[in-house]
Amino acid sequence: MNVSVLRLHNQHLISPLSTPDEVVSWFGAMQAQDFAAAKWAIALRSQHQTDATIEQAFNEGRILRTHIMRPTWHFVSPKDIHWILALTAPRVHKFNGYYYRKSGLTKDIFQKSNAVIRKALEEGKQLTRSQLGAALDNARIPTRDLGLTYTILQAELDGIICSGPRVNKQFTYMILDKRVPKGNDMEHDEAVGELTKRYFQSHGPAQIQDFMWWSGLTGTDAKRGIDIAKLKKEIIGNKVYWTTKHTEMKQTASVYLIPPFDEYFVAYKDRSDIIDGRYKRHMNFNGGMINGAIISKGIIIGTWKRVFEKKEIIITIHPFSTFENEEYKEITKAADRYGHFHSLRVVMRN
Picture: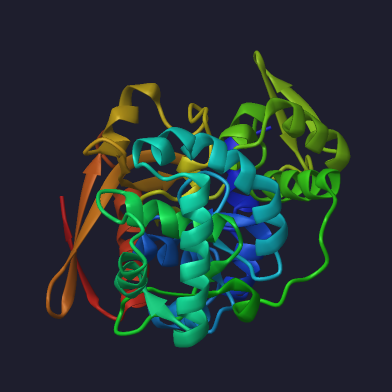
């Protein structure tokens, strides 16, 4: 079993899906901390998409962006947001507890802030972060330091608000139940099984520790999810992998420029199948930041960065070792694809 090649197929970097909606639904949730990068992550896995078409899908509410699972932003499908929140939000609250207390935010304050946010959005329908901050300030709710961040995050996790359409490139919030009518609730085990299936169908082969890192679920729930989803087990060396299927896929010569925080890298606790341990430090930039990566045959072989000029994009590549001529040609094709995504000419630099 070639782990990295199977992941390329299961993540639909090979054989892309049709629409942004299908991609997000296939994954269950996709990290979207860096909004621009997350749009490119979707485009890599879908056919004929541009920055503009994915932005349109976001503004129309066909994909949503909210804090879900780990305490960071994710893209999530409207049909999945309610049940994933119900399953994972309690764990995120537990993780954030220390920071709530440090910011002086109590249960009583959150009850009040949730009510203020709901009332403001009932009146304004969609509001920016600063507009919500003004409403909270007027109600004398602490917004200094991380106060505003955590009161808004609390409202997201409590299923009160989610992303609205962007206005002049500013993010807005809307009341979740107005943006997405609530569907049928899932029982706990059903939700655990469904989230487990989504992860391993889109990220497998993977280990249970990878799923726990990605989802934030406990070891007990992760093991239960594997049983419910009836996953297939494979032992390679001293590692146990799980997947929804064992079908062997053909090797591919394609090269991909994946963005910072892409699911191909960030969704695994153990990344040794896709990057040589000698080069892991190259993926981290300024602490928690994760660089964009160059993938060849499923393995990360370098990093890349881009700078936008007036009519072009400057892409600088940083190889871990010398690229072969054919490899460099494939990298150039991948860079041109990124330029097409933004409708701009690409200039390559080493």
